[in-house]
Length: 432
Image 1 (cartoon, rainbow, N blue to C red):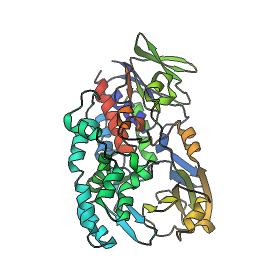
Image 2 (image 1 turned 90 degrees about the vertical axis):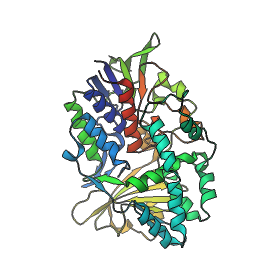
Image 3 (image 1 turned 180 degrees about the vertical axis):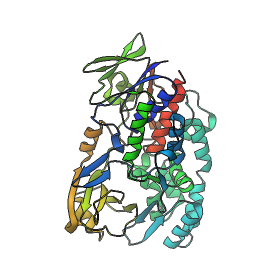
Image 4 (image 1 turned 90 degrees about the horizontal axis):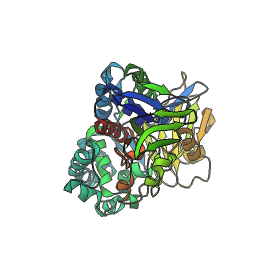
């Protein structure tokens, strides 16, 4: 039995801790905030509540596998519900496309946007099928050695083709380029710096759909927190790990204001820049900056909106409707990116969605607020070209005995990537 210390109580840390606990290790999880959950936490005000971070996930098998490999199956604790409509995109020319999962529904949706666009879209998505298989097998589901990559995987990771170049070559219609690039623009990336193979996100979304947790995504964090106790994990909150203690070339403990916590292995599930022992290895990478976020509670039902509405333009606004509200009310979350020279709700009103007269609760979060609240960006590492993928740490690191999970250890943020990174760490450490 190894003594394992997991740094960080977000989804990556929770997932790593429960997996390692089930493998028989003596696990201690240390979190700087008073509560666990990170971006899976909930924001509440005046009877309203909103998901602080993601409101849905792709690849539901990742969450199901996490629960199955750490104890009781997911279905015995939470209701994972597929969204009928993934999101709606509205463009500045007044047109729109409603995006569901599945090849045939997407073909019809884009054909309604313009004759022939449906086939172009589904052909584009299908072109990522082989990329997905190669990346999944060689990078996402098995620990990998950056110096000894499978030939097919190396060809993709080292390709100079950017997503912007791929989309420009594939689509003459700018609206299709916007839809395909949206997941990355929404996370603050420049498509010229995102590798083309990351377009696998469209393939994953079309094939596996988008899923949410009945009652809000914070219930996922609550279920995993309960499972920490089931797996015998020791939890220490309101305590910041200031560094990893390395002696004779190997991690032996973590440093906190209250002293050292001994460890045979350490899992970094936070931004490694916060730990001097790892900072030099990631000095050439940058965090992806979160958007401006505004949570609002309304005293009447919201306009007829989908679970997620993307309003393209500058600024780009994303409206999410998954919040909880008192009877007769509604809860919305708005993300803003780009030139936000005015209040977000005023910018929203320019799209003929004016909720200002009915706002009875409001919580504003700037990018700085979010980074300070969570101790780093939940969006992980900023794409700065093909070399970015090799600058990440995880599942192993150059420091023996130290492993990395979470958004900063994956090629993308979101629960699927983060959940897979935790599985890789568990596989790398192995059973007790």
